[in-house]
Amino acid sequence: MTRFEQLTGGRDLPAAHAELLLCQALIAMADAPGTAASRCDEAAEAFRRIGRPYESLRATERALRLRASSAPSDDSISGLSDTADAYAVLGAEHDAARCRHALRVLGHVQPNRRGRRGYGSALSPRERQVARYLTEGVGNREIAQALFPSPRTVEHHVASVLRKLGLPHRDALKGRLLDDP
Image 1: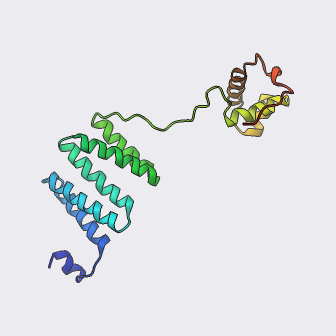
Image 2: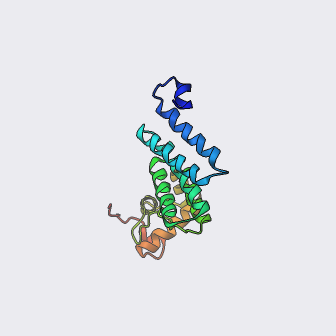
Image 3: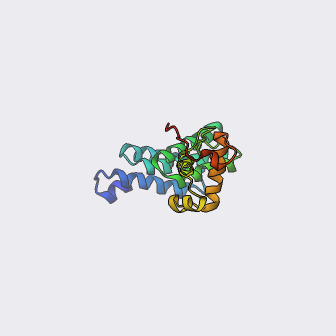
């Protein structure tokens, strides 16, 4: 009978067992990083089996970082990248950022997949709102009061609307009907 079984009276406590594996990994980190990584893998699998994806990812991340710190490989790099993506799916952005930072430290630059959606020559939803006010002859300050951005932001939107619609000045938009997408 293991010490864990003695302490738990032989009861099945899968979460406690997974946590114990993680603790053993932490203890082994200084002297035996390979053993620590293996314990982290075991903990990740134990957490996965009991339906705790976040804890499973944390253990997986720790194992990958241990392996990458001793001997970076394509497997540890791609594993950290996949872990960052999995964190993002769970909504754990701070954890995803930590993985991406670890990748940068290892010299692997990952392209940023996120960013603001581009509208090209089409009006963005906010620009469309500003354009509707312009067709009614409303000034920048009144638009800013209605939509809550600063007057300077409204100026930027007005300039963008005029550029995208190919109009020389705001008065050219006054009284026009805009097509809704």
